Each structure stands twice: as structure tokens, then as C-alpha cells.
Length: 285
Image 1 (tube, rainbow, N blue to C red):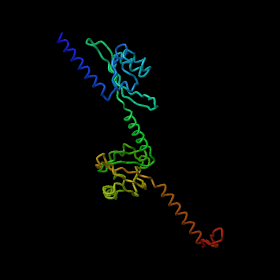
Image 2 (tube, rainbow, N blue to C red):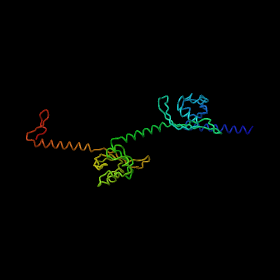
Image 3 (tube, rainbow, N blue to C red):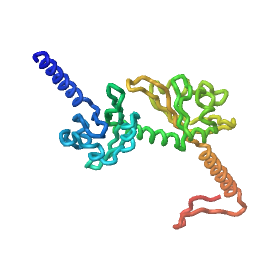
Image 4 (cartoon, rainbow, N blue to C red):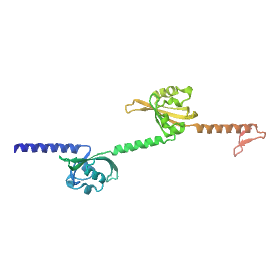
């Protein structure tokens, strides 16, 4: 009897210790029997699904949660493990996301006796992933060319704007040295006029004439910045390239028009006077 008491005490102590581990775990954990009824729920599970363990023990998950991940629960009761994400709206109206595993549990003879519900709050990760995805889409769809390179000048990213301005696809550009965009006699410009000053200033602007995939000159205004990791170590360069070709063509056309007008104004056979509305002469030929 004494040995039995000692064994029972060890079991109780082990159960208490295991319970403490379960309740302090960052994940929510519950155990459900073959009838889909609760047999255990740790504190995290109680907090997230707003319940007290004593109120749900022996209660079916369907009765407690309704049709929440109902399909996955049915598969778990058939002995098929489930791995999925579940969204949950709080009383405050905030949407929370959880990564959930349903793991079937079998007895000593292989019979299905229940399943474990184990999950983790991934709301912040989900928000971060969505923010990163949004940023990536914004970068990719930017009208400007956004090109990042390694410290050695090897192209790492090439967005849709770069494809449009330089008429080169992502596959054609990735892995190439950025100097392939420069004129043949300006192959050292990236290292001498961009990379070296960046080491001191971390950001700089430049007006450049580059070549596109059709071997035509493209005039761009570029802003360069150093890329650094969380420890402040240089990781490469990112360049934002604004296509100035159309602007320069417009400016050139305006200058030509002004020159023609000036010539006509100056050499006209008739006298021409330009004045304001009060009659003050502003110009004459």
C-alpha cells in the first residue's frame, strides 16, 4: 500500500509539473477525446477562446466553438493530421490569426482515442508578412526603376519600373553587373562616382546617361543609398532611377521653339513692341 501511495504521489507530482509546463507555454493546447469532447485545455487556450476549463470539460468542441475549423476537426477524428491558419475576431473587433495543428492520438493498440489542438498566435507575423508583401508590390509596380546591388555592383533586385525604363526583363538583368547599363567609356562610373562617395555620405544624387536593352541612351536622375543590415554593416546599394528622357525632350523642344520665336521677333521686317496693360514697354525688335 505504501509503495502504491508513493507511486500515486509521483504521478500526481508529475501531472502537476506537466500542467505547470502546459499553462506557461506560449502556445494554446487542448486535448479532445474520440467523441470530440474536451479533456484538457491550458490557460492560453482558455484565454483565446474565452472559457474556463471546468466549464468545457466533457463538452464537445462543436458545442463550444460551433463550426470553427469544423472540417479540420472531422479529419483529425479520422486520424488525419491537420496544419492550417485560422482567423479569430476579438470582442474589440480586432482580427487575430493563429497557426493550428490538430494531431490525432492513438492508444496502445493503434486505435484512435482523440486528438491534440496546438496553436500559436501569428497575428504580428501575419501583419508583418502582409506589410512586406505590400511594400514589395509597391516597389515592384513603381513607375521609377528601383534597382539594388551587392557591394560589388551585382544586381539583386529589378522591378517592373526598371523593366519599363531599360527595356530589359528581370531574368536578363539579375546577376549582371550594374556597369552593363553604363556607356562603354563610363564603365568605372559606378565605383568611382557612386560607390566611393556613398561610403562617406550614405546618400547621393546624380544625372546619368545609361543604355537600355535596345542600346539606346536613357537619361535618368538617380538617387543612391547604402543598404545596411541591423548591425549597420554595408550590404549593398539601392538606386531609384527617374526617367528624364521625356522631360529633357520637352525642355529641348521648348528651347527650340523659343529660339525660333526669338529669331522671328528679332529679324521681322515690321516693328514689334511688347508692352504691359499700362503701356510700359517690355521688349521691342
